[in-house]
Image 1 (cartoon, rainbow, N blue to C red):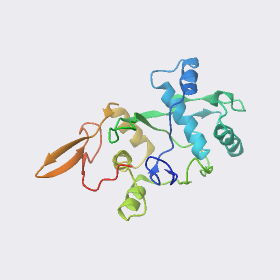
Image 2: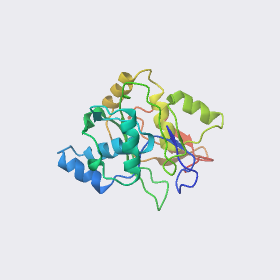
Image 3: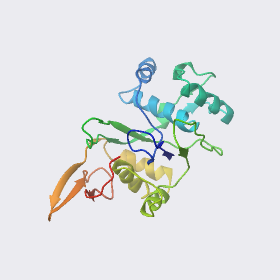
Image 4: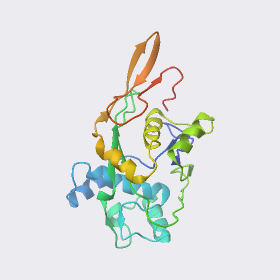
Length: 222
């Protein structure tokens, strides 16, 4: 999990997963590699994980930690992903689609976000953060993050909380991946329902989420 910088316009200080905007260069590389429809999103997920944490996901052969730090610095300096030093190839099939969220909480900022799960590379990979990208980064269990929020020690936006609850059901990566494969990747666009004078923000109940609603009153939406 990475902590968003305090000065960001959206979800400042929130714990989220590495991620960011899909660039035209991601689309171009996906086309060059003849990837499927979500190929550009896979490329962006791999790139952003390196850029924000220096952890290599979906790269073969796996680079050394010092190589990842060089790649991270190059990406932050806006070097094109395809132009990074070293002889590496993308292994986009290492990423499994987990969910797609299209919340409409904000009239100005709209997000269409793909979430992927991937097995961590072998070895003791400690995340590295570059100032301006994230405030911090940590390896954390889903249940641990949820407990921190309950204790007031972490901030989560609605989609992150729901995805953490879904991940926390499982005890291994294989179980998480099986869950991802077992459910369709449909756009999750929360809506508001009113019952008994209370408003609830709600999501579909067939996509694997153990909790599908939350009281709107007091909900932090970034």
